[in-house]
Every structure is written in C-alpha cells, then in structure tokens.
Length: 228
Image (cartoon, rainbow, N blue to C red; front, side, top):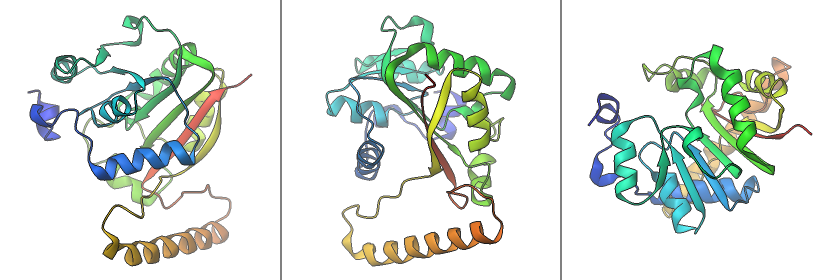
C-alpha cells in the first residue's frame, strides 16, 4: 500500500465498492446534466467507486491512474485501466470524468492536460470536472486538506484553459446535493438547510456582485465540450 492510499484509507478489500450515497450522487449527476455515454473514461479513479457504478450500468468504462497499487487492484477485478491516455486503444470517449483531479496538477501543465482531453473527446462528448471551489471560502478545507493539492481552481481558470485549447464550458456552478438518500427522517433538515443555502447565496451574490453561482459550494462542477 502506498503512502497516499494508506492516508486515504483505501484498503484493497474496499476497492470497487459504491456506497448507496455515491450511487445516488452519480445517478443525479447523469440525470441533471444529461451525461449520456457509451464509452466513459475516468481519469484518477481512486478507490474505484465510479468505475464500479459504470460497470453496473453496463457502460464501457476505462480508467487512468498513476498509483501502482490502484492499477493492480483494478486489473485484478478486470477493469480496463492504464497509466496514461497514450496507452488506451480506444481514441474517443463520449464522457470523460475527473473527480477531484485537476487540483493535483501544476498550473503550468494545464494547457497540456486540456489539449489531451480534447483529442480523445468524441464530437458530441462532454468532459465532467469536479474540483475544490477556489472561489468559495468553504472550498478552502478541501483545497488545503490534502498536501498533494498544488493548484487552486475556479470557474474562470477552467474557462481560460478551455478557451485556448479548443473547448468551452457549458456549465459551471456548485456541487449537486442528494436530498433523499433513504433516510427519510433527515429529509426535513436537508430541505431547510438547502433552502437557507439558496437564500444566503443569492443574498451574497446580490451584495458582492458580480459573483459566480455556487460561490458558497465547497466543490465546483464544470462541464466542457468542443468549441466548434
């Protein structure tokens, strides 16, 4: 076990398991943002939660990781995973997903990353990105809670990297929340908190205009597609 997998408590016997909460989260992402796909690539698949969900949905899923332990665990379960994009024989993907990945990459390398993503993205495909929200005070805990995070990211930066590398954002905003997760007794509390969140965000955006949507969200979601 590498030091990073040990720190994340990613044990081998837990690899490729999708919690009910994560499954509901992925379901909501796909339905809310119309993420239709046959060939899916997840870059930085970590403990394999999303890989497993895609497999259960009969999607043709591929993964990329640099951690040798995580690659070995995935291959043991017959996932199609690789150390880099160049190793994959399939050249185009309908959906490319990066959950909490870009913040691990140095800013000077971002142009190269976005160029590589464009090359393997199908004509009508989408790139889905989630990062700690650099425009939110509540994103600081996520950004600085991991010593391997080297770049603070917000929607403006992603728009910049996209624009100069043949891509364009079609969505940028706060993270998606799952209100109903099987524990119905918590639903009223979640609804109240969600309503207060919306009110507070709109008030802050009004007072400190201009501010982007999702300014109070700890995570930022962005969806990109070809700029042509």
